[in-house]
Image (cartoon, rainbow, N blue to C red; front, side):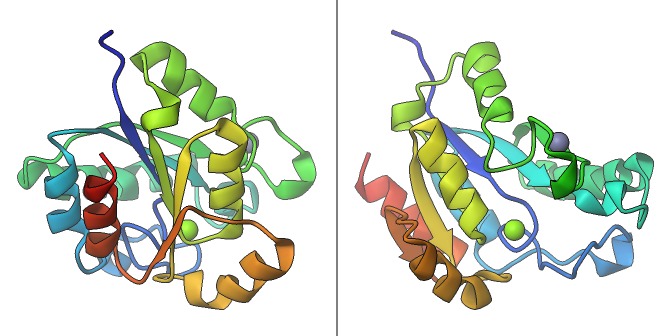
Amino acid sequence: MNRKKAIILDRDGTLIEDKNYAYKIEDFELLEGVIKGLKLLQNNFIFFIVTNQSGIGRGYYTIQDFQKFNDHLINVLKKQKIVILKTYFCPHLREENCECRKPKTKFIEDIIKKFNVDIKQSWIIGDHPSDIQFGINAGCRTIFLTTGHGDKHLEELESLGIKPNLICDNFLKAAKEILKLL
Ligand SMILES: [Mg+2]
Ligand SMILES: [Zn+2]
């Protein structure tokens, strides 16, 4: 009975500004409401990041560049006493048809097993239709954010008929909605 509830976070456009294949620390910019939102959620949930990083496969930056940039995010959050248990990233191109690129659920299956997560009580938060499809495929609840590229993707989301549980225009609102549904 000690299964944990998780929030599985997209990174770019969800936690930080999506600056198209960013990997330099100077381009790092946390989005509004993220710290407050994560603080509200951390008593009830454990946190993971799952991010598609095809910039690696495209040769725009290396795995080391990615890790350095991501570690910066993890450290900024750590200073606020917010812990991300693990970051999962897919370095592949869509065309490679790998098993780890969202909306495929390999990384969530790993999280469920390794961290004993109750996926039905867990949430995906993201700004892309593939994040929502990822959550639906995994059987968890989903929030589509219109931060990042979310605004641009909202029409796409609707035309694809992908239905998130909620749509929010910033991270803090998303966190508050999740708490209401505990
Ligand atoms: Mg994103
Ligand atoms: Zn992959």
